Length: 211
Image (cartoon, rainbow, N blue to C red; front, side):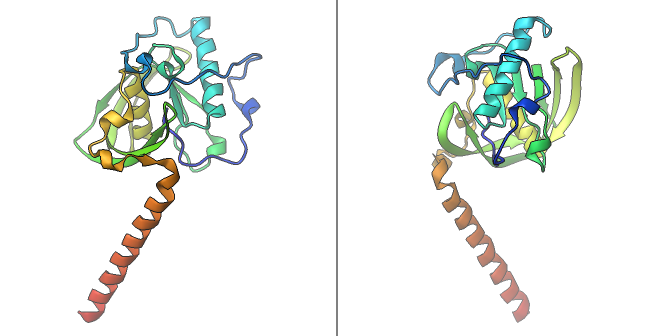
């Protein structure tokens, strides 16, 4: 599960379009559990009532955990199923998206580093390089085909969640483990980065003034 960068003050769970009468909050597996190291099986029938029930419970669990995405292995179900919230400027207006048996293919060679977190690795953040452009194919919760190109943070979310289906955590994608930090330290990282940018801007202005 990719931890969200921003959580709204309130979430109306009953406004979720897939509401059913008895959804459950599922337990989330943590790093070290064998289910997170398995290659998940394909979903045979997206319309199977058990699959639909799992989708609803995963959506409920994702909202309860204040996450941006959740893969089935994270709730101890080793099947190729992902639910996530597509990135948007307005968190309250996003509807959950479902990917069944997703396949992603990198487009080009551009790799972008970015901070990621995961409820299966609670309390930590790490800098992870990801492809900036990918092609996605999958089935939705109705069994209809998804076939599209996505980029930026949206592509990062999908790559992170699909990694779970192959038994891979974001920590295994990190190129520099020195960037693995406690989430509580993130404000210090951002403050230091802002100070560096301001110092760089000041130096550039001084060079222009001397020119």
